[in-house]
Image (cartoon, rainbow, N blue to C red; front, side):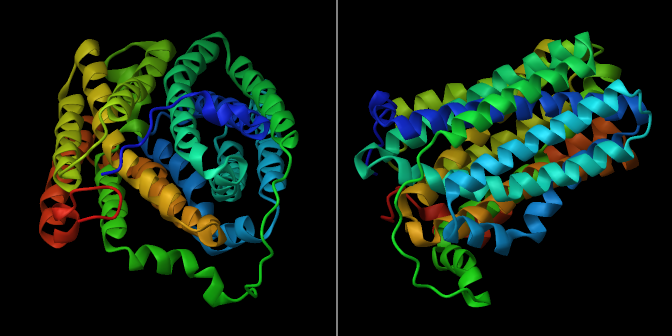
Length: 409
């Protein structure tokens, strides 16, 4: 494959990208804080693992239902304005959660209603901000921008949950108030990004135009196999939604421990991301991806059966590291291969796949835990992921035989 350059400061020579990067980092950091706080607060109110699954479902459904709209909006309108408006809206959601907490509310319904609004905002935010990155730097700095953006997200997934656990340990209001302040700063930085010039859109609005992203993914068979593989592997093997159950009832580590558990996959992902940047996948990319997904399932099962904190953290870190391989493959293909004219629509479809594998996976985990118990649900999910690796090995020979990430077979 063509080696991707390691991240350097080249992308930061462009002021627009610097503001964009900082805005994304603050927004991602605040999202992790809200994620920890909402999960703990909902489980504190209801003590029902199924409700933890609803937390993910409420945030995923808007992206699924609006997939044809959000991508089209990102391709036809000012991406900076969309990004800024969505961040400001997320700040209002954090304010609503803060007001609910300070009022002493005891019902989870207002939280779920706020999460639906939050999910809708993120459904529009995702395609716009992901597509905007390629408009802020020249082609020679795009790989740097991708690497730095991915790193900022991973760092936020490590530090954000820890901060969220510590802040929630002080009070839920402290956690939501901090998230609100971070989102205010993020919105200000996003608003300061100058809207880049874009070529005129000659494509007329139509249902066929809205389907362009889906057609692109269907045309690239290896991309379709890789995205769907990641979808079902994480959908079945994800255990994030049940971490509050493990933190409170199984490992007994409290809010701070919950933050540590949520941070562990990010730590593993950062380590693997660093290795991939130093030693990119040069050959047998498909086989490496299959092996890592199977190991992701095995690590999930180990976590599910573990009753020791150190083993649980280690298993979660391995899960994050193995999952990073599929993220690396998917994001490289999408950002470097997609034309700008359809980038928003392609990213909208990709966002649904990512959301399905995470938020919908959380719903699956909560439902399974409600039926079978948390430990059997996680162990069975890990086993199912290993089974998916075997099935995709048979069903997607093109993906299995893929050797490079630059389109060569």
